[in-house]
Figure 1 (cartoon, rainbow, N blue to C red):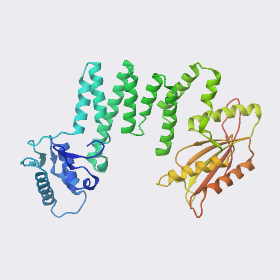
Figure 2 (cartoon, helix red, strand yellow):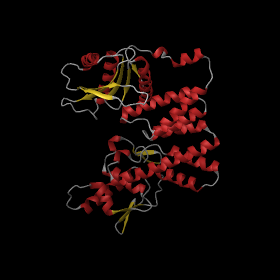
Figure 3 (cartoon, rainbow, N blue to C red):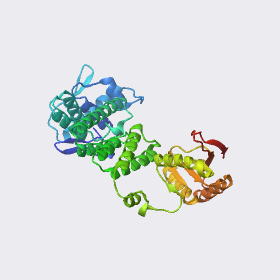
Figure 4 (cartoon, rainbow, N blue to C red):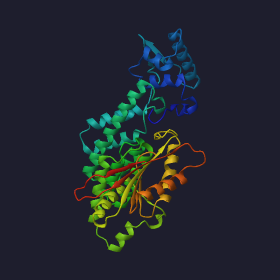
Length: 399
């Protein structure tokens, strides 16, 4: 049930492909086997099988589905039995054919861990439960109310499992298993901030470069897939990571080598994650007080033919990457670029005039717009002002 639906009898698949995943037989087996102890009320079963379809005799239609299911189960080699029984308007899976379910086993391990008193055994049970959870409960049937409710319940259990296991691993300083748990949790429950667990473990083991790379990759992933900014937890770890770098001793030449772009150097503007961009922005504002440079901030947003920002769609990611490339090749070597959600970029333009900003926009357009393409770019420009009292940027012009 977790991560997808597969049904086996004695190791032989009864349902194991997408071709048969959307059928009344599948829906019937899912809800009956999941509720094989308490049964399923007739009204609930009929809603799952037929939804809001206008059927003249829905009770007869339900009996037909059950009759055909019994024939199919017998043909699959199950022992002779009345597989689906009815008692006082409630349908049950027969007790004569035992059922093993991954979701039920996951919940059993979770409950057992909560009741266990010994820390080592408690940790063992929590880790086993975490490994049992291999994905959302019946993700292909998430539109059913009963599935959505169970998926939410199991997701909450999984989160509790991970948090409790992490706490125990932190106490025992078992950071290697903590790292593995974070990787599993992030893969199984994406965009839920579990990368912070892996990052904490890497930092605790002194693997600072790996932790920094994970942070940068995570920020980029969250931007690309959901337009999300780093969570408070990740930002706290990032600042802690920065302090760890500061406390490390090494020769100045080695430090400069670590800081340089090395083989990853590319022409055009400097593209960086948002937290790095934020630091560069603050540093530039401080430097302006001495040098008196003219600095502008530009925001570029992909829009449709009616000048509305694009927010969804399969083409948005491709357009975002094209926009990044167009910006990078249109600005100067010392300018800084950062992605700010889907289809949106921030650009820090240093030592530039307002007229030059217009020229940059034209260059970006010429590289981004292809043929009779309907999508375009919307620009907003602010001049960046400086004050030792940290005044806010002033809006100069809206393009």
